[in-house]
Image 1 (cartoon, rainbow, N blue to C red):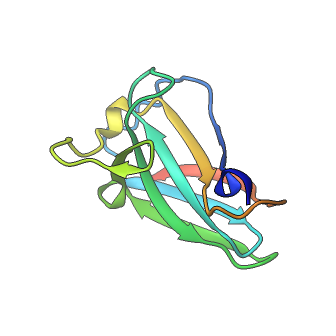
Image 2: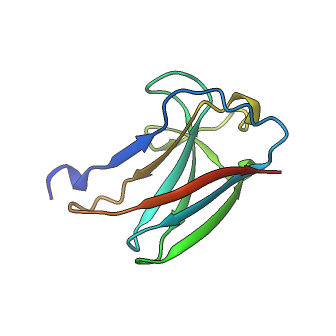
Length: 118
């Protein structure tokens, strides 16, 4: 398999979401049975530290996923980082999704909405 199947990702435009006081994200999503990552960035760099939360989808089934910010793991290019501070909700600037399961071919994920919760 060429490039071990690669990966695909998407993320929001840079925006200061001002989520101080919120404790996590609530996402309504429908997938294809594969594993994805919900990703957060707290700076404006294109390629820097991101915080990830892995989740599995059920084929063609809408799911609600509630993830406290404390469950996100700091990473850089897939490697888990240590000695990195936890997410500061006030600093969140991007939210995105990534698939990286080394399987070539089509995938499908739909996002109905993303909300912060207290």
